[in-house]
Length: 505
Image (cartoon, rainbow, N blue to C red; front, side, top):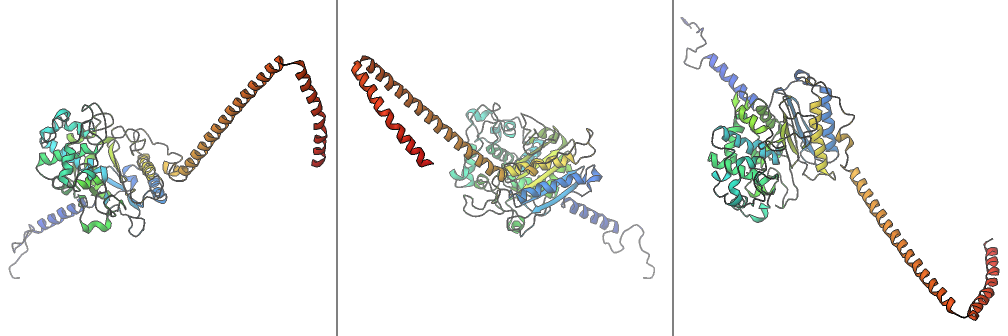
């Protein structure tokens, strides 16, 4: 073109967006894609971990599959902002057709809902000044009032010290979500709030109601807008849609509902509440949860997006009453966190076979998702998942090579290696119990036999004594007659004895 010279400032002569803006837009889009694809990956050595020690995780998790504790598992271990192990084991169900993927496979989180959803919603509202954790629950839920209910605070609900029972069979007593909600609000207070500890699903449900009242939105809608969408957790939802059913792990095959469950909440009470409940109902992938865990490790922010304040993270994740934090549990030498995590570690587990543990002192987290409630083939799937949870946490911590306290020695064997009481040991213990019962029964029979023998002896002694007294009072003639009779009988026995001896020879 005559007389034309290309602009040197990156602008366009035709009024289109300048090149520099297009590049910036592409960069932003790339950042958004990164945000929704989980944590960036790094080799273990790059974050101070041993890949050889981390490989223990492969063995212990696979042992759980091989033992029939669960058909598959999804695992992510992260440290210092990176994913160092992201892996699927086994399949979504026992058919083996769909392999598990830590990026794609969706699991029913069960009670992880209490922390990933409900507690986080309360944290967001706490930051916004819409929820006071020391205020009475009746401030937000006027129907939850009267008697000891007036003394129950939000903090009591968060620490499971409201005096509420562990749960109620809402699915039996309620025909609609509204009736189930009314039943939760009418739950009895069994002891003075603050004076007793009872892990309660009802308390978490009430926290969900508080979040809805304070936000003016349904719990799932509020969380999607304020948490999950911000973090790019695109596979984290209540009531997942039918499109994701194929990559969702099934749970119960014969529940009270009368049909196998896949993509529908396993917990019957959560189902009675409409599938969105404070205690259960959330579905997610291990990769989505890794982003959530990293957000908490980074003080409430991820990829430049703040979800909650760092002060709220610090407040809600430290021990507040016993081993409980606010909503969260803490690592107290059990509960699936192993024996090596720091005192500041916090996390939670879920009935379906899920767990999330975060250790801020080591800047790491471990995630395990399974569906151990899906027709488990092990005799005691609860024991299998308990051991694997603890082994996973232990193996991850023991793989840390730059801990200021030094490198810890690896154990000779892990719980999953011993598989104590998973299958065969249980049968042995049952056989042992049966043998023990037989021994006890035999001992009782022997004791009864001895007692009977003693009674017989005593009876004979009594008869002899009676005979002696009769003999003393009798005449000498009778005594002589008895003696004569005895003399006549004695020689008769000898030939019989000798004859019998000859036959035996």
